[in-house]
Amino acid sequence: MIERDALQKFLEPLFPGLMGVTLTELSAERILATMQVRPDLCTSGGILHGGAYMAFADTLGAVGTVLNLAPGKKTTTTDSSTKFIAGAKVGSTVTGESVALHRGRTTMVWQTSVRNAEGKLCAVVTQTQLVLD
View 1 (spheres, rainbow, N blue to C red):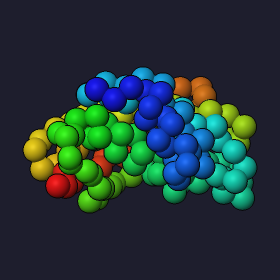
View 2: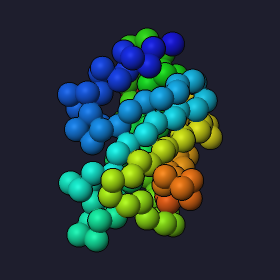
View 3: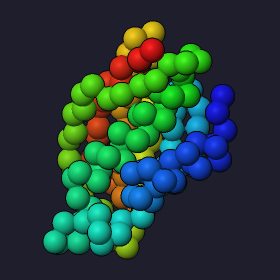
């Protein structure tokens, strides 16, 4: 399995690194990460933007898929569904937990729960990752 530090370093120059995604726990079935709610990731009301929730969750599902890929395989997201439930305020930290719902040969499905600093559920994102040669 790829180590957390190696994956974190890989993400740093990419969009997840720009957003400040920090991987905290990795396994083949579950990914945990945090992200600071910065002003540049918020709406005008100082609440984390919906697109930031989605990108955060997409990153976690992709990381989970990468951990399950056979050598030489790659992945891309084919679809994603987001339910927004509550907000996360600027200056706080959100936590994402992504769990594998399906880990197949050609697709993988991940569901990510994003919680605010108080532990309240803010968003649930379900995504399908296509496994590519």
